[in-house]
Image (spheres, rainbow, N blue to C red):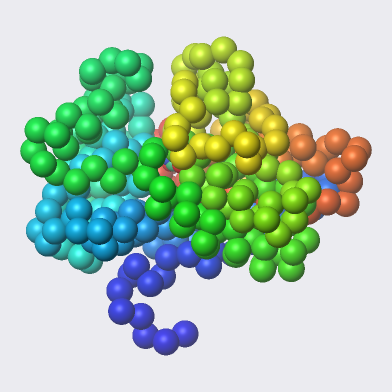
Length: 306
Ligand code: PMP
């Protein structure tokens, strides 16, 4: 590998790793895409750079500007890392429910963090409303990962092709949670263009209405929603599999102790859904790729009980 110009050149090209023990009895092959291998520790590094590149290109983002974003934490880390390299100031708005580790991480990269109550979308104190208000009042740049087209486009240009190439075109199903929907929409679009019968499966927390079912509270961070975000294209998604917090967190602990994979709740959720999809008789022998979006180090005090 040549000497790289900055940490941003390390983003992407994450590996697929076979789940040997947790999928031992499974008639299909399940592999995880290890997004924790990105330098900021999550899949969101990809879109952070993409959204900043796009804004620099169209002139929305001028040198020395302030970036403000509503984030579950990971997009914030990606933006803060990019901002450190490119010389921007960052302010992040994050709901109370997100882990303390993520807030500490954002501050470590030099960002400011504002915590909001876990308020519903139509509440002015909801994290999205607060970020929009701060952007309007101060003239700050709001990347708006939920609607920014650079988000799904980046997954269509990188995440999808990586899965296709690294599986030698054998991939039969893509399983992932959706927060903004960028990963599923973008990577799913690319894969379906290569192989129209690829199944795109949403791993959705019980309590999120994105994949159906009643609205409610859940502890899984970064995935699920009570409305369809603009970057989530339901036409790309074939089905949703609902997963409880307890099922997802128990799977995280198994992935750590049985596979040596320390990953976050959304990854546990995707693996639970992947196993359920793979258990159907018609899916025997197929290759399932589950997105493991971030590192378990973000959740040591929660999921891992530290
Ligand atoms: N997992 C985690 C931990 C996240 O923070 C996010 C994004 N908020 C996702 C998954 C969802 O990815 P996407 O926004 O591409 O749907």
